[in-house]
Length: 535
Ligand code: J2J
Image (cartoon, rainbow, N blue to C red; front, side):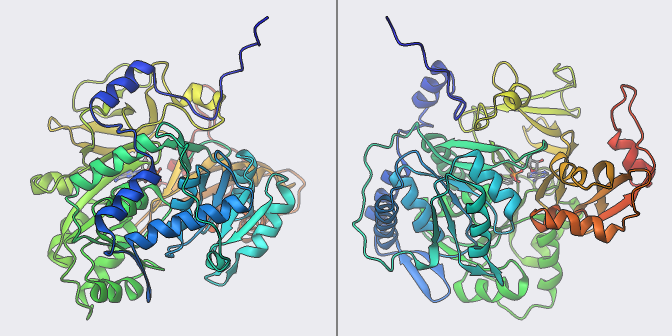
């Protein structure tokens, strides 16, 4: 009698075999793991400086060796291939040996942001059955050991808490993993999300390295590139578009910037002769304002990338005159698809569009709400599939059924139009999300926390326009009749007490008696925004 077939895994949705063959034949997927890639970099760029953090430096050879040592440390602690490890590190040099070491071991980093708190980390650790959690000790006056103790108490699988700043102090046998394959999932990246709980994105060595190599080429990186890590290092933009990994691929230098403010970043640009960096639009505005009166020498800067949220055309037009460098718009997503304006695009495309896809095999469909393609040049929902866009979220079968079409296109939730040149213009969003200056807030996630308050009958969160952040969040709250009155401050404090990242705490709270409804009886968020005269 044969064994009953194992149920299909929901951890990873593979590309159809014929499609995968095509991506290999086209040379996109080269069968290289991150571990082999790093060995190759060490062989090519050995003594060149790869990473700078304050006074500390790692050459390519040292980075390769440090990755083997961290892999050895994790192995010695009982972490094995396939295990999930939550990584919550700020922009510090240790990020790279930790992540590259986990890749080498075949353990999967689960990326998070330093601003995440008990609710997010607890959920991510539990959803992935993570065995370990890597923290920076104390950072910006926040004690991650205390957070880790809370998470550990709530998540039984979590056996280890590792302070990255203390790693390497214990001698450990270097580990040079061998049985990882390029088709394996290398890590889990966090989705911006629109539903109740954050979703995880499984990315393979093959698909991610393709996006890294192609991005490095499009952005014309070389061993002369000096990249300032101003946005959170674990964000997909900073990691791979072309980001830290793209710069390493080209043999350039990665400079860790502990905070993105001009006061911190400008002196680093001057001292390290930084040639490029990546910002979200609100930071670009702050930099443009500060650059006018700055005394730091910013003349080494050749390229400013802006992405994560829509950059206003007026701000885009100011980049070259004010900062003296080129602008590149980047419209990407952790699920895959990344669009860049190109260095030889005419100025009107660089200023007025969000770029075109990396790959000739990125498939773009722009459709109406019935999935029917809209006439060329008109606004519709962006669907995409391709050699580095996932086919499914991690352990999310139900959600995958709506987030992907039957033929494997990812529903981005973005409203775009496409120019004859292939460039996309982001015109809006259909997903129930607030894009707070590049930081994504899933409305339903915060609404669920509000509903946990005993005095709250119903809650609905919408985006309201903001001159600096682009959008802020506004919570509309209906209180239970007879419940004691609440103030906006109390509502905000309640959300904070639930252990959510600060950027998810509603910027504004309005108390109302009812929500406007759509024709089918759902809450009309468009009309909620309109009630305030905001759209
Ligand atoms: C308008 N909206 C944008 C842009 C992203 C590179 C750059 C950004 C991200 C990122 C990324 C936008 N104009 N220029 O992963 O590799 C909004 C869209 C998109 C969502 C994805 C990268 N750039 N967006 O921002 O996963 O709504 O990735 O679907 O955080 O951000 O968010 P995220």
